[in-house]
Image (cartoon, rainbow, N blue to C red; front, side):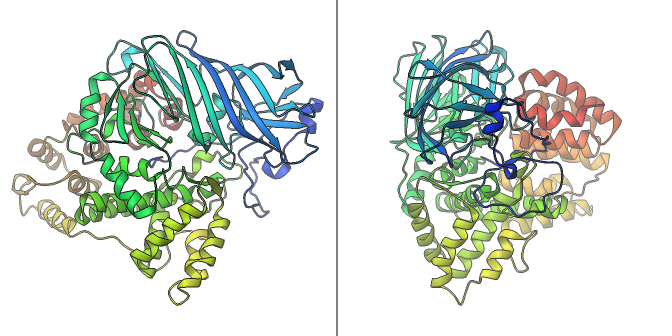
Length: 631
């Protein structure tokens, strides 16, 4: 997933008082609590799942669902194949959230089950009694219209304005809101699916998709590679397909299909250079799905079909590092996966490192260095605001919502750690290490401790004079950045600094700044490093010369609108309102709501925009931002 921060609050865990629920209650150490934890974490224990894969482990899912756009429900069944890890295990525990469980059967015969009292963040444990010879169980259910992992859009909220749209978002623990399963990244499953839709709509999934399948309202899918639950994804809409290469293509509403295909036409090249450097692509095809603007993230790395925000279609390929990032997850995250959300940096740190390398290989060192500097500045901003406990790569998330893990720490700090390893042992040697690492742990979910052990057995043994266990421990288990950590630099930005300062000092006018050849990254650096307070004449001059309020680049517009909010620059507020109402990507809207909330007038403005936007926002976007507009 692309970078974002969420602030969500966990609640104590409660269980139903039935005999079966008491019998199958997860161990105490898996239960969140408001109190500070003094005991050591148990590596590999998933504190955000009720499931019991150490006793009974699900291996395959057979999903059969009908999408009811009138009720806003997915209705059907999930058949779970499982194997008993313990021979005497007689209960399967799966995760659910707000699901209406209709019945549970084994070989067509009803079996006993119990649903625990819901926890605000973790949902409810569904405990199922297993007959002795059973190896498969079927759960008939329906989702809630307010499922946290499903968004239903009206025709007015789409590009075409004629057909409704549905998409799911399962990371971190939202798969349980639309499928009853063992919702833990350490449990990898294959799946088949049968999806029924209105006939005018196409269904696509994180599985094998056939663009030539007739749009007849009846679709089947197969995912033969084992994946964790957070990578199960479904979208339904009026979608067309356009190929971009032998193994790459894009699904989108017809109105933006050509623009998306042109913007992301280098995806095949990205795929090829990544294979050449880090080993084979193991997922057959890599396609993109362009979602409506309400998608709360930049992208989601669902295997075979990354879900992508339309806000990165800039017309000049300036924001395609997001595509490189989601593609890189095909190696780090999808093929080798974090076992728990404590270990997210194994996904995102590795993927961010690979993203920079892919961008360098495809677009050159000049662009790579600019993007690395911007990433470093974003990391510094988080280090300046996050408490020390949240600056640790192997974060302790007990008693918290796992969505709290998403900040620049697992992304940029993780990538910086790998860059230091690269610089210490040499790029060619580090590339060889990564290729071997991806191959060694292919289709496995691993912990931070597993990675450290692997590092000790490989790079530390090969380069004992260049690497130390103490330094590695500091990077992974201590807050902040170690002294002497790599600092990215860009010559292009030196010129931007000079121009910005000359303008601020009054030595030159905005019209005298030679910006004609600036890239998006140079514009972002120019704006992001402005003083927080600017005068009205300065703001008017910048806007008049550079037409920033009307920028069609969503990242540049975001940076400028944040400046406008911090300085109460009212000529930009009409655009600001429209921006908040029509974009649901949290990276772009959350900082704006947060800044507006600092003044009573700004908060009133934010509340009005939020109330208009809310029907089109994803449930996660609502949860992240509603606190800024509450009285």
